Length: 391
Ligand code: FAD
Image 1 (cartoon, rainbow, N blue to C red):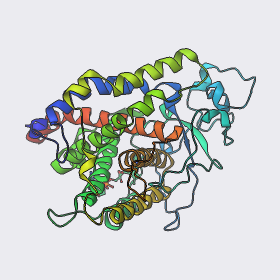
Image 2: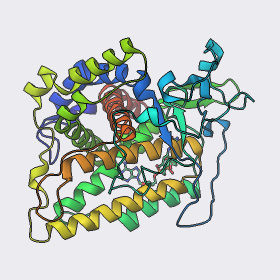
Image 3: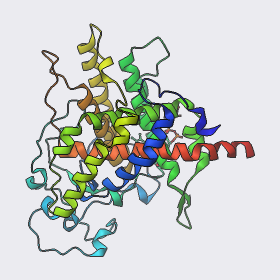
Image 4: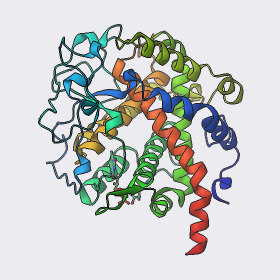
């Protein structure tokens, strides 16, 4: 039982569960795990303080862990910031939350975008070219985990996402493309729930963090559809990364440290051109099957609008850290959609791919989140299953 329940092809994808699990464990997860620690991939540019465009702020956070530790200015790689004489100390690399020296750099230096274009993503609500009010966040200091954000505020957001933007489908009733949007959101939701359960505050007094397998089972593992949607989303994003392989291989990963930058480039290359990936799962998802009908272009605009609404809803997330990861992962999904479905509106020819630095960071970090969730599911599903037997 357990993860053995998932056999055969991942629904609407071109690889089977066994292959995905072994490819992930042997190749993708280890490479991504290293990649996201590289300076280029660990600083995310984000606008965290935006008004919710749909209703007054009703955020409720019970834990201090809700707040995001931004980067003190002297923590960025040199190339990301204005000239400064500050020297980096070990203490600077620790979470700066609540410390007076946690000055936030909201002025972005154009050098940070050296070699990268500034272009808006049509799938997202935020204007990616607007740098005002932006701040850099060190993702390694702000792991996605349990924050205590729950209750009506969180519920309202998920409800708005599902009911207003991608209604649950019943088979035969909805077109393939809408089904894809629903599955992407549900897969992302599964991944967020898995990270909450995998890094949970087990004992507030003792500050003990660890895995909460019961929660993982109750929210995800006990629902095969949610697990299947997670695998689907993983393969969808993986396909976007491999489709953009040439772009990613040639991109500029300059952070001012030549050794780091070469390593980043090498890890990206290993990821997108790994022989096992090319051999075992060369086409994780086949996007060419979509938008074929007569109403294809119209449908795409409609779905793009729905996804932009989902992206706008991230400004309503009432917990800073959840908003950070929500925004990052929705931008990552928006980037995957842009890579897979960018065609010129007039003649339907593919547009030359142009990605923002921040889009690449979001895409790779999202892939890592999903990869980690798939690994947790594969390893922990049998354990959670056996727990059920003991109850
Ligand atoms: P919820 O997860 O809130 O789910 C609501 C309903 O959606 C469920 O009752 C079920 O009917 C349905 N549902 C659940 N999962 C799926 C799925 N995979 N597919 C389809 N339908 C599903 N909390 C944290 O502690 N840390 C975080 O980092 C964090 N990030 C968040 C990011 C966003 C964008 C949002 C909206 C919320 C975030 N939260 C976070 C809150 C968290 O997701 C839950 O809302 C909260 O823990 C309450 O969980 P719940 O059990 O009530 O169900």
